[in-house]
Image 1 (cartoon, rainbow, N blue to C red):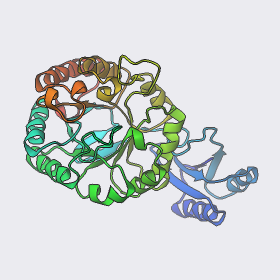
Image 2: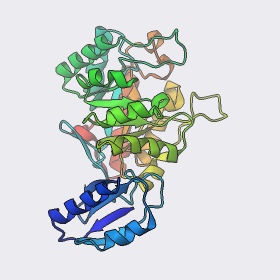
Image 3: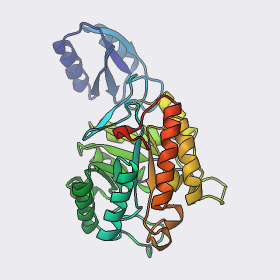
Length: 343
């Protein structure tokens, strides 16, 4: 349930409600919006609790939340969450572009890619230092050395970096280098990891599991939010269906659904969503038309030599062409590219 406070409620009244909830083994999550202040009640509630809360000073109304996910729901927070990463805002209406290789393979490879995507208008550099793979024999990343190379690229280009963390034990290490922590599809229900990134105090991007329903995805988001981290964005990266032509089936419909039921920003990853480089651009454009707050694109200087995901990586020229197309689509929707990109 959520407790809606009166417009003129005082801080002491809010604090008294939070204290009362804590006494009953419940957690109150405060959300101060432009039009109203609400307190989300998390824990095992009971019918009498609503009657008790309605009697407290400063309370306007107490509303049951019907969905199993609470903190990520529009019922808890009606206004969109806006995440700030340096000078960038994610979820504020402008389109953010994250681009880079699937995996950091070498200093030369990453710096060359970082310079190219920056020149084309990308805002955030992506690259994996730790790579979970279906096969134990596939390339699994450079570890901390990869993180150091990412930090070097940030220093040169000024782009913030997003990179994946795969174990709870690595959260502290990745925090020292990354601007945004990524939780990959295979770890969407690694609840210990979700708790740890929820305590991290930095923006997190949670990818949808390959067989996850939207409700399961949002319940995983609750783990992060319930630890106090409100800097959370979601990423649609395709789901597993009966179709085998593509790597995954890119669920573009998830984008407007998330925007309807949740206040969290939604990013689209058409590279993993399709697994084929020539499908990346059309699905990226479709995702933006559906309302995505950002896109994540894999780019590599020589995709045919890539150690990971070469088949779905764009060349520098193809990425530059995609950026020009994104500018046109965004303009046709009355939106803007983040960072003032004009193609």
